[in-house]
Length: 68
Image (cartoon, rainbow, N blue to C red; front, side, top):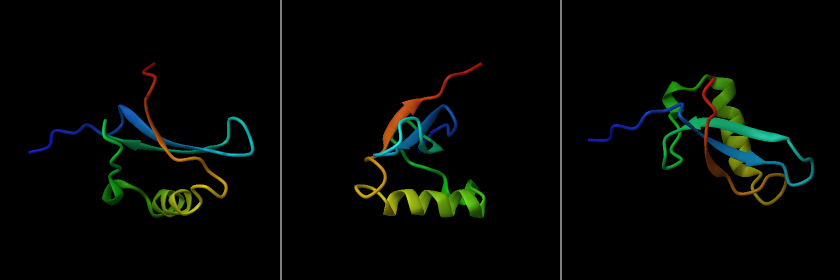
């Protein structure tokens, strides 16, 4: 059984052309996103980001989120 906690990590797709731009999605420590828990807009953005790897966006990286 997987006890993944979404929200403590993010899957970040960094822009290849503009520093500081890109997409980030809540994920588990392995980079798995909860597609069922996303809004339709977030899910569309996620699929767009995946399709643009190597064209507009870099390969995604899993990053720990900063808790405030």
